[in-house]
Structures are given as C-alpha cells and as structure tokens.
Image (cartoon, rainbow, N blue to C red; front, top):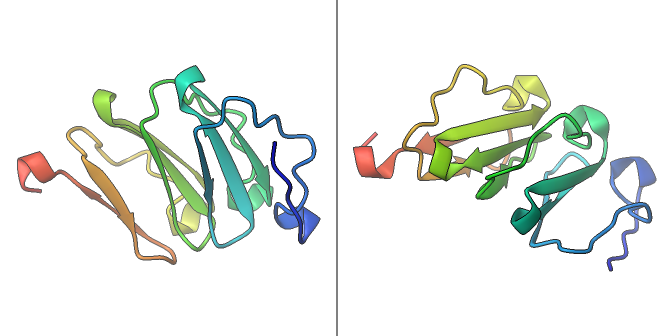
Length: 124
C-alpha cells in the first residue's frame, strides 16, 4: 500500500493504483510517477499525462531500469535486450526512437531536460 498527497493532477492521488508486487517507484520533476513491477514486467504511471503520467501503451517486459529527468520524461531500459522506450514530454527526452541502445550500461539525466546513454563496455 501507499498514500499519495498534494496536487491531484500532478500525482497527488494514487488511490486507484495497485501497489502489490511493486519493486521500484520513480518520479520526475513535472508531476508524474511510475511504479515498476519488474518481476511481472508491468508498470503503472499516474500524474500529469503530458509529462509521463500515462504509460499504458508501453511494454515493460524485460525492463531492468527506469530513469527520469526533471522536465517530464522517463526512459525504460531493457539492458539485456539493448532496447529502451521513452515517454513524456517529447521536447525534453520523451522521444528516443532514433537512439540505438545496444550495449547501453547506464543512463543519466542532467536533472532537467536531457539524458545521456553510456556504453561503458564499448567505451562510447
């Protein structure tokens, strides 16, 4: 179970979220949350839909990590598959469809509006 409070449209109401099996909770700086059920390959997002609060179309099977920035975007990394999916504000990292995530070991955010994907083993 969990309790949320604050501005409802920014994630302050999570009464409809089932927290059973949650392994991780993530947030960004623009009013969205994600609960990851890694063992089940599922996630639920809530808060401001324009900034990552809606992830209903994303397949979380195989997701190893989720990263966020402060401006309304998330990245779900499937490290073992060399894949990732981004959602939220497309202008600030919510669209990564042109990025090759093969070999990515870590993703970092500048805390605001950008991400960097490190291919540590490849030196890139």
